[in-house]
Length: 238
Image (cartoon, rainbow, N blue to C red; front, side, top):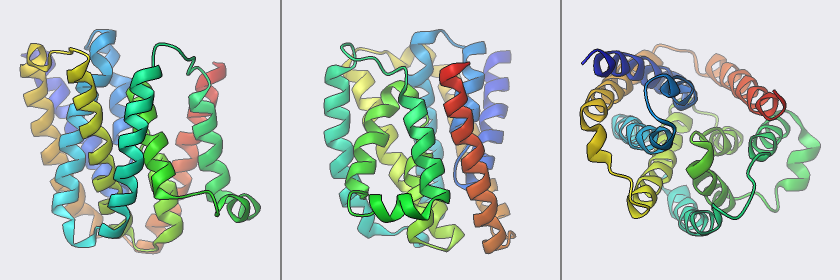
């Protein structure tokens, strides 16, 4: 029971962080999980927990979700999960975090990059890579968030819409692991504690976010995204 309680509290904290700034909670959580779970359970348990975190965050902020981006993202996600699940055992994904990190940094800070990539960048493509790669990387939320920041200036819109898109990613990922034969029931106690923590954290984060200045929030979000991107790049070499 000690592990269940501790993981529930940790998930509450990470979900609160994600509720306030829109991302980061999943990355913190997957960094902590190896101390509690076997390697084969890390991404599946993380995926189901993050599904509850993002779905509840989207529910609490449903009025701010930009519905028009969801069909495009869903289409890309369905194609991405199908392809990556098929070729998972045949390709090397060692340098995936490097490319994700570079994309995020260039997308946030380089006008020339944005001008050149604009005709290729879309929610279909982001859905393809974010959901497909999530089977391996675990936490890929910054990819969609980086695009949302460029399209919308409102903090609640960015956080709520990112949560809706990540819900699609994690839902498809959970189905993929069920298809591969992963038995979630074996971790029922841990999952219940983490899901309770995730939903409670989403509620708390949503309430706290309302008290934060929108412009300062977006600046902080860009900086935080950049830190996560640099961390992803360094993880390839260290």
